[in-house]
Image 1 (cartoon, rainbow, N blue to C red):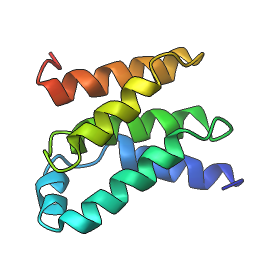
Image 2 (cartoon, helix red, strand yellow):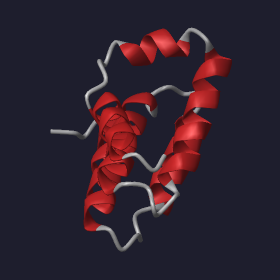
Image 3 (tube, one colour):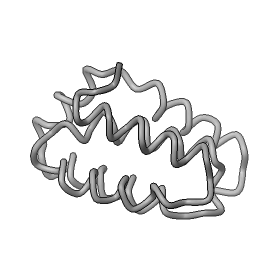
Image 4 (tube, helix red, strand yellow):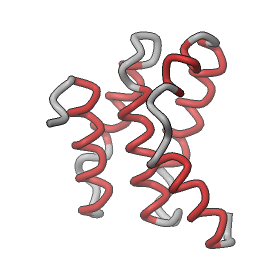
Length: 104
């Protein structure tokens, strides 16, 4: 992923995902778990574009409501709260609040 256009496309795809996507994904729990694991792995790569990583955090906030992978998502997002990137830290905080139902 060295082409900026891919980062931009994926960042927008993740950040602005339709909320109806989460229940549909939950119908195939194995696929959902695979996606969550891939997103958690990708968000840890510090040289990925910051907007991509914050977009992933937004999507994880949406997906983290599902009980099958909530624990993994919460642990992954909590692990990033100490990051030096303010934008990523803020996105993770927002995602965690969304999972907890405190996203107002």
